[in-house]
Image 1 (spheres, rainbow, N blue to C red):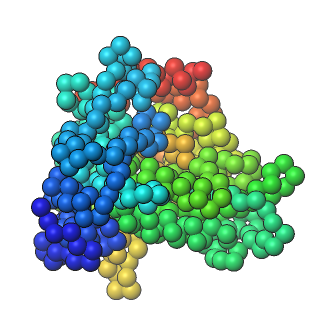
Image 2: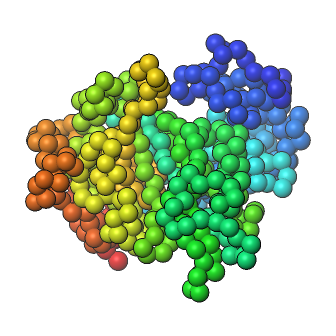
Image 3: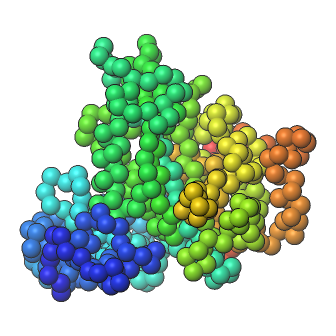
Length: 477
């Protein structure tokens, strides 16, 4: 048990987070407990509930659709609270994971609380403690059909097979919409990038989202207004402007959870302010769409091993990742591009990938190697990354990132890896258009690619065959 404190924290040497460094300074519960999240215990939370008069406990988790779900309790006693914290509760797996192989006749699953991923619900009317959960089957083992299980298996398989700890960050883009008014003094089409108040109405909401995410334990890199701006017209009385929140690098499971929580926070804030929030890949044809770009960094001992800092080029681990994304990226559209508007976004070619290619700094490429930020004296001040620009706001981030892990493992074994990288470099394709491989134009094309490469994703049992069967059936409809 710990003394509940509001503004006291352990020394930096005593605190370690998942990144091995001091915890995020804005995380509420780390300030309250005064110790890092990996050390939180059941008794810590019992004392927290007692001291803060917390009445509601919410078990939150991610369903097959990639959205947050919740099961709420009002504990009748502290013993009841301990039971919830230690054992969780049962749920209907056939409803949460419909069509994924959980039979209705034996559908009971368990929600297992993860104490280290707890936070106070920032939108609840009454004090509510949220516990993020994983899923277990009736045997108590991780549920094979759970997106959380699938991602953790892919992540651990990559760590074992390659000795690489793959980290990622999502660039969460969205459109905020409000009813147009005569007093509006806002943006211009396609000219919203880094705009500030009074020329954007969503700035206050976006900044509140940054603070809220930090408080609940989602490390954030930055936020800004984006290019997209859509003025109201006769067909749509809403004015829309685009915003982005970029998260910090984290191990794959944390990166996926961070994206889901960011979308949840943005939706809640927009609802509270009477706005609309859309993550659709395209709102109106001819205007910028919303991607969900992911940056990756293959880590060894928390140091990037994907790129050569001096040249910006690819090291071996980076080559495996890029090759895997080039060879299997179109199959990953089954998890990363799930809306009919996904193809509109790609086909209109507004800073979206145009073909299966990679390149330094090139925003038209499927895979981009962004500039590495350095100080005036040449010191690297940000971790080099490899950006995958194909996914959009319709993505199921858990399945997508699990697929990326499987693709990277397979990428190491591509026999013509160096030739593949040579022929798919954007500058080479510019000179030799015949080398270009087009992106899928329909869900039927995506289904064909997934069916061809399904053994890559099913490797070592990471993706259940029943899940791939269900995804294929959905795509073919």
